[in-house]
Each structure stands twice: as C-alpha cells, then as structure tokens.
Image: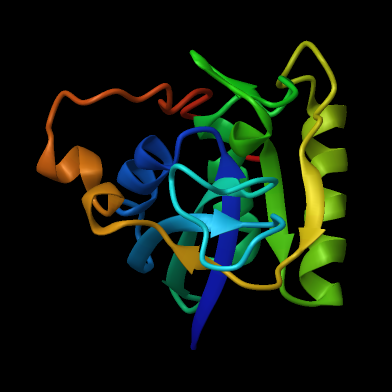
Length: 162
C-alpha cells in the first residue's frame, strides 16, 4: 500500500536527496507546511517549515524505518537550525496525518532520546499535517539537478538499528 510521510529537518534539498535513494520510497516532493499563509513561496512562508513529502510502499519500508532514517540524516537536537540554516523554517518536525502516526512518532522520539544517539535531547516537534504546499519547481530535485549544491544533511550512525 502506498503511504505518505511529511518531515522537516532543515533545508529540504538535502532531505529530499537522501530520502529519494531509500528502498521503498516511490516519490519525493519538497514544500512548505505548518505555517500561517496559503500558497506560500520561498520568499513568503511565515511559520512554515521547509519539508519533504515522501510517498512510500509500506510493503518495502515502514513508517518507523523512515523515522529512523530521518533521525540519522539531520540533527534533531538543534532548535530551529540545521548547519548554516537558522530560523523556524529549518525546524525539526514530524507532520502526522493521524493519531497512530502521532503516537508512533512520539514513541520513536523516546527511543532516540533513550538510545543516547545524540548528546542533547531531541527538540523535534510533532505537528498535525494540514496542507502540504509544493515548493517552486526550481527547488524540486535540486541536488539531483545541481550536483555539488549546498546541503547540511548526511547519513550519521550508518549501522544503527533503533
């Protein structure tokens, strides 16, 4: 069955680039969610996070496995910051679509905190997914179209099993 997960963890370019390569991921899109205005743009997205929307086949990968990957490709302990990107647009957030996803995300944050994987506690927020607005075309697949472009994302803890 095809499902969706929407995650924010800094600049959406790097997140999209890493998620697209993950087994079971069918499609990715970058955009804005969790903010105050309709039809946000890069220049006008107050309160929105830069996020990636991932379509995945749950017969190949699971919500929990994608959460584990999410917590390995960004630093979830920095408030409103990833690398050189600073501000609430770059917050770490899981946008849940239903109560089951919220509970799984909450449980996974506890696993990450209890694991000692990060020196500081996770500040990732859990926010209800309302509307995901696709970012402008030039942001889609940015690192695929611009090899060597800016990213602050990388796979950390490669052998970790959460």
